[in-house]
Image 1 (cartoon, rainbow, N blue to C red):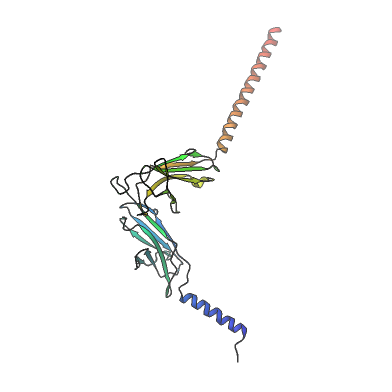
Image 2: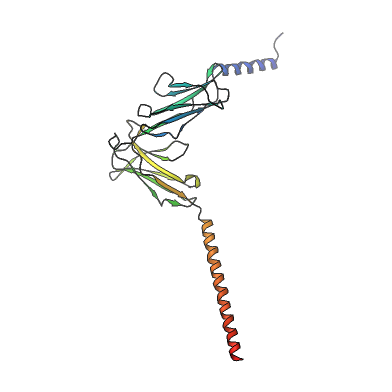
Length: 264
């Protein structure tokens, strides 16, 4: 007997699902670094990889190497693994991907994580630390446009802007030569309360994009809603004017009473 159409459809669906599993098609894991992806030279960093709860193990790969950089079993709650680097140098800097193992196959690699190492000594390869400034100022209201300007007097191909505690990767811009100064303008528009925090910028060369200069001096950006303070100040001013009006009326009333007493 020839198979019916529903039977053929079910057979096709079963074969398709089995082919996907055999091909190792699983959701991509997430990858991030703690305390961040910009690491001072010689400092420790932990790379995390998170996948589904039934993952058996996790693998970390660095671009440019043929074999997995490291493999770890998951930790509680059994959906992620960590890879620790105790002493980050230029050798550990680069682009990393991670994968998780389910059944008999590895998942697709995660999105790339760029691990950047920043020099700590003035005698390093990138001796000049950049300058960071802000316009119109370090304290702004929500909705405004803020420009963070990173500058250096030495040759720079790329500037990076990093925010303390931010989970996302640093912002990166090609530098441009302006009257002998290399600079890049990072525009934040419109700013919200989430943009508030401490920023630093770094410089790098295209010949070694994962090696960064020493950071600029920190710049604190405050995003404040001035509406409430203004209302409070206006309310206080109105209260003072009201009190003065009451006192003035009372004085006129007392003066008028004194006149009446004198006439009588």
